[in-house]
Image 1 (tube, rainbow, N blue to C red):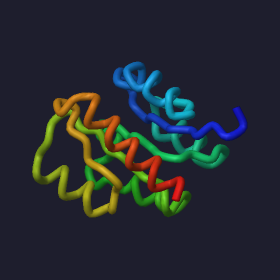
Image 2 (image 1 turned 45 degrees about the horizontal axis):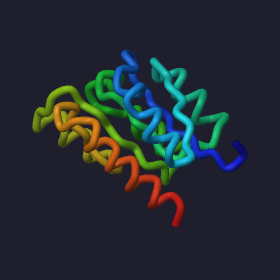
Image 3 (image 1 turned 90 degrees about the vertical axis):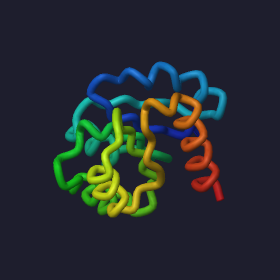
Length: 124
């Protein structure tokens, strides 16, 4: 599909990506899953990506990888998914000016809402 939008899902487990496939397909999107930061960077360098869903388990202590991504794709909506929330982690991540901070226990609907908002912002 030529107008297909790519959503990059970087997660070492890839668990939630299966739940998102039909949601994204209904919106004309294709899900690309990576399991490492290196794979994520390679996709960003070679493909046009509409949004990045990044599992916080891939991030280093200071979350500098987000800055690297912003250097490649300044306006890319980045949604960070965290298993649990700590004020310290959330503060470090939000300082990187991400699009949305998703706590997995909030459920897949919360992530779908964030992706819908990210896609609407990209189409304007």
